Amino acid sequence: MKGVKFVKFVQVVKFVVGARQIRAATVRERQAPLQPCRTVAPLRSRLRWPLVLWVVLIGVCLAQASDQVAALQRPRFVAVDVVVDSKGVGLGAYQLEVKTPVGTEIVGLEGGEGLFAEAPFYDPKALMGRRIVMAAFSTQGAEKLPHGPTRVARLHLQTSGGAGGGAGLDKKLVVATDSHGKTIPADVTLKIFEGANR
Image (cartoon, rainbow, N blue to C red):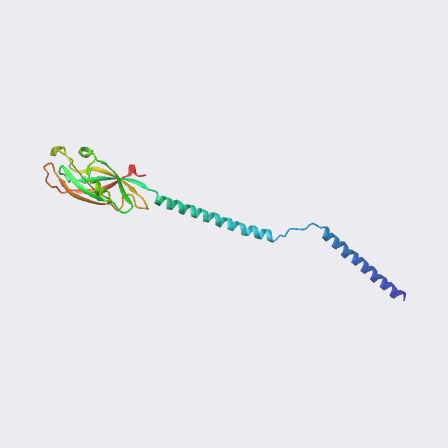
């Protein structure tokens, strides 16, 4: 009987001690400060940076696109030299025509060089339709006239809407004569004057 009572006593002691240990652990857990979650924060930071990079990239692309659109819409001014080559014969007079494409307007006309330094005569009505007809003459003798390529005028153009500066111009030499009014073979060319482009 004494052995049975001793075994029961030991069991009761173990139960009481175990209960106290569980209670103490529970109290420590309640008193311990809450620990932050270690999985959510890194996940949020990993998702945040790619999103920020995408936003920055989209902003840069939109800024570049707006700059390109603004550059296309911004007007550009171009100067074009009109050169007549009389091919070794004295150039006494000429008449020629220049047409501009859509998006390009003629905004100015000035003279050339030598005997044709003064601005040529032109038709104001033709100028309204993206077309200019110009003509000039000299009363000097044959020995003083230009006998080769001569800049007879300079056109000032305004381009917009992405139109190429000086591109798409159509020229036509109506007539060229010598000092006696005789028709001579000649050619007309248009050259962009790089010093005035802006």
